[in-house]
Image 1 (cartoon, helix red, strand yellow):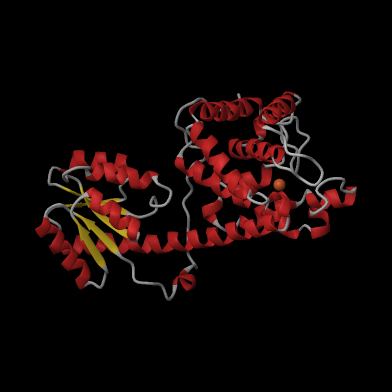
Image 2: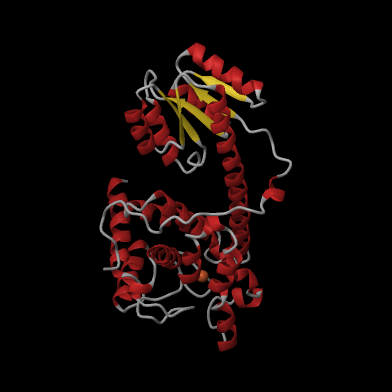
Length: 348
Ligand SMILES: [Fe+2]
């Protein structure tokens, strides 16, 4: 069975990460800001004054709606979030922020009441990073805030490094005018298919990055080979076939890309073992590269290239199903992909 059952699942286990040695990278940064979301005005003012007294730029708002507007205006580095508020509760806001790729890395400290046990369980389920119990002691507040802001510094640095590599991926794409927009379409199709398959959020993020980074290794393929597209000599083909391993080697130092590495390395494997670089067979190819592969083939078929015209949707579907049956692609994933597209076309 190549496609896992239709239920929420985690594709890879988390590994502990050590960022020792990154201190030099973190010098000269901006002041980190904090958002307090607390409907009780007096509590909000007290919290804000305590934080400002320690030099943290702080904004206080009194509802989830105000918090959402403030986050859209300027994303904070940390959110202190009251549990009970009029309108949307702190749990609901926390869950929404943690599900949004743009805000999911902002640490959230939930402020709970004295009977904290049940509140904490709900907070953990909503994705809260830490808790403070009312009445809040200043020592506990500063300890929690200090450690979470330190962690946020590291994640910001990693996000920046990811962005640089993704931009590099786009610059590789730009060397071939016939593939313009390919990376963005791939990232969109792959994340859509991942969500359709109910993958966990970490896998969705990996698929999005995979869309931009899968061909990064082509940075070492000469222009004269890239621009030919097809009819490569055996020597040129050997050079082209190195791009998955080259890309993997470039991205390997970034621990935040660990789920993307298999996508980069295995996006040219075939179910019958005829692909490269490792000649893996159906059950051996991890799920995420199989997903990227399916959407990559579809986009390639639907796009005009110097050596072939663009196919229509129906022609692409017939071609991909035939190629999957012949042993190139994952048949079940191809079926899931077209089921997703068909569902959309019916809605539209
Ligand atoms: Fe590739």
